[in-house]
Image 1 (tube, rainbow, N blue to C red):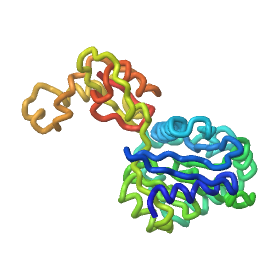
Image 2 (cartoon, rainbow, N blue to C red):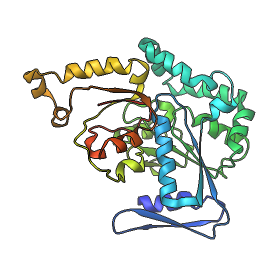
Image 3 (cartoon, helix red, strand yellow):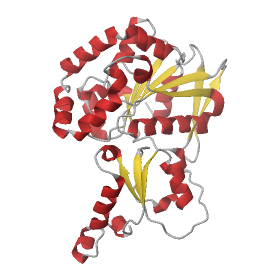
Image 4 (spheres, rainbow, N blue to C red):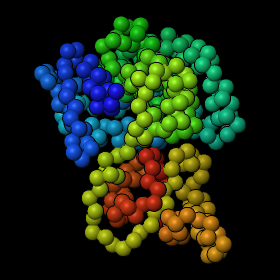
Length: 320
């Protein structure tokens, strides 16, 4: 089945008997037309600020929906755990920051909960305890589609939907935001679609019981502003280094700048070992603290193609 046909199958379920036609344009883009639409459909995107990449992916999906479909869909990005439940779900951000600073503890938590029987048991217990709260959080927005971009937001919502008899009424999609080394809680066989960033992740999903018909490989979500950049008046080549991911919790921007300055020293041998893109980077002379609007900041500073490695995280330190 082609990607277009698979999307048609998924969206046919939104709003009961509503039908969708997805056309493939000559330039390779896809357009979706809804037949007999009666109301705006609600899309609830589940995320948590554990690292930054999850929120960035959620916002990228939101922006893409708005760009492609306009007001056909109402997009809600929420950390339902933080807003509606209690400990430990409502403090995942704090727990993540603590464990990142203690690497051994992070390893124990990651690998210790990897076996399916372990994470299934503790997630089922949490789901049972917070079932009413999770249901309230999910149903407040009356979602037609739920999109999870976090590894801990598959099992609990799906169980709650099943217990409340809502699993067949709400489409559930998982978009994996870890490029390679991902936790097994990303994989749940009851999702309608599982979007994987790579072949390696797709293979792991198959091993964990997700059917091949549910899996699609489409890479990582990217903000439309990165791929549809409007070039501003160029003020000269301004090189950027983007520190991405969990590093924001482990080093200060100034410390990172010092390390980068050492990388791009005047030592010829060191420069010879660097990639062509790295050679274009200048020694940093200014540091911006953690930002959430790095895509807008980059546009203000110059053409986006001057940014060598612009990843998806919205929590980044920008050095130039």
